[in-house]
Length: 215
Length: 249
Image 1 (cartoon, chains in turn red, purple):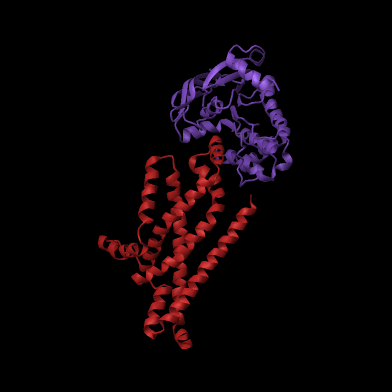
Image 2: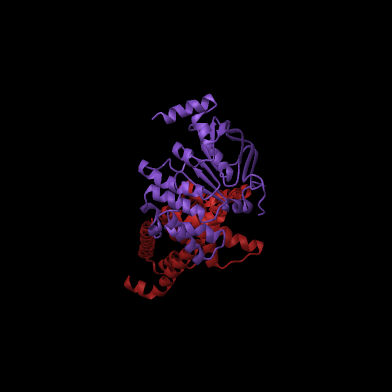
């Protein structure tokens, strides 16, 4: 058992690093993209609101695995070839952005309407009001839902194994198949996911406390 | 924007419906430069709506509103520029909760008027001095009393050097002992020649500071006149009825 781990430590560690990289990139992209889509959804311009709503309804309702397969095998058919790593990041980001969008939108709606009115009355534009007044105050209530999304991204990244991205689950699978120690390896990989999720939750709590002090 | 010679604010045949309910019904009003117009009336009379329509926080259903001869533009940059010249003070203060007092005052000058930080901060400190809160520059809004918050809110609006100030029931959310400190700032502002539209229940303020009192009921301007005329010799039954209810105790 120990030798199995010793012999394959390099591959497993590589898998952990890839999982961390996919998770970090996909989570950050999904927050940025989700915020943009949320801004669309609360914008005074009806066509932008429609684009935002359509985006959310498409990407919130597609199974991640289906999207991964479409991006990995469908896009090359129309001449767009992405690396496996990019495929994983892109698919995760697209789906998670739909959820992030609704989190940001709920946060925006949770800020008292008087704040936006005061900003507008002072001559701030819609974007300035959002960036300077609304979003900074929405952030605090968004932290815990964003932690949920982070965990969703970390765990969801395991599906990338299905399109042969060399992340943790894929490496565990490979090593497990080679050594007939599948239970051990999935047990270990599950533990690593738990640790990543706990770290994300911990960071979220720290961030939430720091934002609370400013009130 | 070239200043024209006519009234600073002009409302012509303004109607405002919320669904099928009329909040404003054929309102005509002109506010001259330097004039202090106090709008009073029972709750639901449309006076707050009137105030909020002047800087287009509420859109009107029909009619025209001009500020300095310029019709209110639709939502967008032109409207933002116009709002920058019209200060507004709200019933619920609406200070930016995540910013300290000084940053509340400098945000719009820096973001909208592109005033350099040092200049914006100097002006902010002068204004805080003027409303008696120079020592609170670093405080967060939540650390202030209601009266202090409202004085900061007035200073925040003045930081943009507006040519018109709108007050939407500025003392209605205050404890009684804090009303006077806010009214004192407003009276001083009126004495300095600021053009003001003030929606209020403070009859004392109307008597002391108003050039003209506008009495509204049912979405209409029922009566308008100097404070002396209005309070001592109201001409309509509705105004007499209202005054008998608010002045007897």
